[in-house]
Image 1: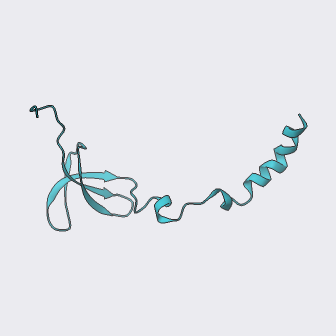
Image 2: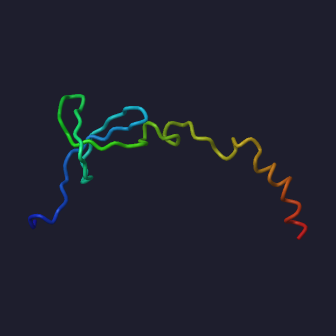
Image 3: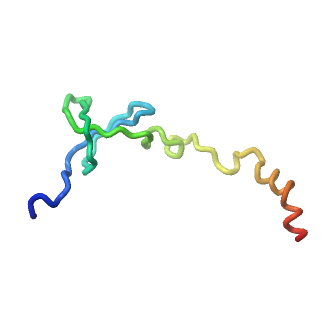
Length: 86
């Protein structure tokens, strides 16, 4: 491999800011901060807004279209007849 042309691929500590969930994986992401893992290692730190531990899709708290409280029916009652008449 040529020197100086490959990104710095190393272990990085990712932290979900919404719930404090931490995980370590290998990445090329650029970081300025470092953080400690649960086992005491000092690794580059990358802060996330959302991870699989806090995203509504993965936690099962996401609302589906059927749970919208009849919004589609309300729309069709209000605008559906006018569109069909034209």
